[in-house]
Length: 90
Image (cartoon, rainbow, N blue to C red):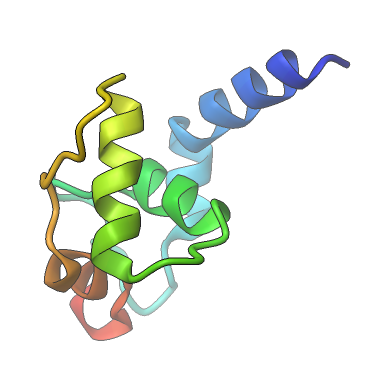
């Protein structure tokens, strides 16, 4: 399997209903049901990058890459990232 095919399969899986259902905690059945600026697939993809810089710098670089821009893009705040990861906010 080529690397491109692997990434395409991963992207398709992250967008699937099956992944969404398995990502939800039993105690939080409504988790990841709202449309946020940082949806579940983007959150997982960002966390898989390794995050070697500050959270805000990683977010800016990640969204710049998604939009295929050379400039950094401030689309999501560090607080939004923390909220998306917080189990009590799910």
